[in-house]
Amino acid sequence: MPTIFSRIISGEIPCHKIAENETYFAFLDIMPLAPGHVLVVPKMPVDYIFDVDDDILAGMLPFAKRIAHAMEKVIPCERIGVSVIGLEVPHAHIHLIPLRTMDDINFSRPKLKMSNSELAEIAAKIVSHLQ
Image 1 (cartoon, helix red, strand yellow):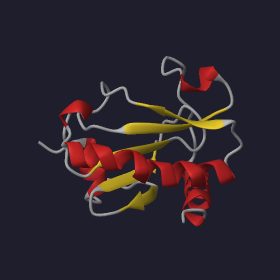
Image 2 (cartoon, rainbow, N blue to C red):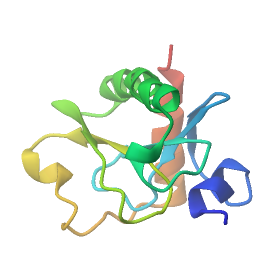
Image 3 (tube, helix red, strand yellow):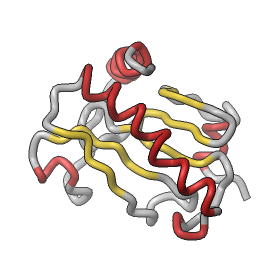
Image 4 (cartoon, one colour):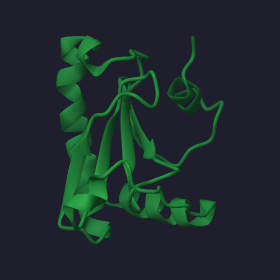
């Protein structure tokens, strides 16, 4: 059964894409904890991150690392936090969240509401700094 993420990957649902290769896809979270919050997913829809094939799982962090370095160049933050929750969508994913304080990665906080143009501007800035 397709997940919302597989529908985003296929282009059925629009997104603010950050990066893609044959195995992974990264896009902005439209309900972010902080501006620039990125989701990194394997294209293969697997519900639980620890059920993802070892080779795919091993490649997620290097793929995310490149994005995190680009994020740091354009989003004011102390660090890029990494979180795996896995309860909200049945498709394994990691969150890359710009952090100024520890509370910035608190998922019980209200999510930000950002306009499509704000999200597009952030995505373009991150993409422009990918190497």
